Length: 484
Ligand code: GLU
Image (cartoon, rainbow, N blue to C red):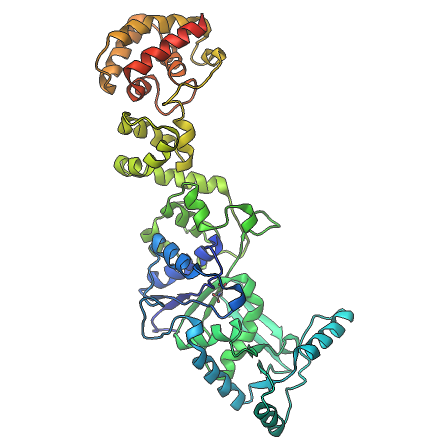
């Protein structure tokens, strides 16, 4: 492989939404290419027509583009190794299958469904795993010719050696050895003329000069057969990197039923794309140092195959959230405002609020954009609340002193005309100083009175600025009345 240009491919089947595990495969595949100035290729594996879902190819394009995983060759942009959609490569597969038949590495099999069902039934009754009994493996040339010319339906099967063993190497799992006698004469071309996934994959990876194959370890058991195919053609196999699946917990895969297995689910939940990529990069790969926060450009430098793990990657929503929080905090205030605004608007319809002040207060408290609506739901209307909220040991407040403080604050806030944050700040601080009380003893009751909550984005000063003079005065009066 030395000296060859690195070429990797992401080869999704268009079966629906983008699962996080697939996106992680795409990411690793992309990173291996880009770290080495190589090419990242997108190939659509659509030969399984039963699993094909309309629109799924666009989901693949859009998800990859949104993530910045831009491909150098692919169905939409072409390249020197096309076509990049398997259903458009039928001639290539047939031609290669014929070559194998000619070299006695594959054979026609005319066993119909009835015969196959019967032998599988029999094997099952004996407790054996179904395998093909190689009935057609040694048909004479004449028999084959006759059946072909009479139009008998057929499949093409791989002629697996009956003796010896196959060793294949995986970068993560090392050398894996299997006895050839345990391998089934797998189908390469189905009766409808379509190649099987295992066959098309090998032909495509070779003809597209792919050097590194990253895929889920559910394909590990098929890898010896791929190797035998490479050998049959006299080709060099690519470097295999089988990655562990993403698990919900030790026993369960992260699946559709969890409601958050797909890229789109996370976008809907308010995750930022760089945070999603950062987190999934860590699901199965460990960076060399302590730092775990990498954007895509940094990942291109840091990522290394040797850091890919062999143990199952357990999805940790709390960690993913925390990483997202870091990315949110790193946004400029302007960027945060533009992303946060639609979420603020879900719970707050008032047009006249100062988004800058609100968002500056929200940004450090937001891990997910979807955390925002419940934090701003007091702005339009004061929620119902209990007076016990004013009791706070740490702030040294109770219902009685809160009432007194609010009563004293009211005239100042009623006469103040300029509700700009800095002016409010100076006036409230002057009030605190004059009263000889602690900041919290004044600002905590003010916060509760203005929001009906003990935790809010920003404190008393910001809340006055956000809801404005009229609401501030009205809500303080309500609190004084409640506390009477
Ligand atoms: N088409 C396969 C899938 O979507 C890809 C497997 C591979 O990368 O070899 O799972």
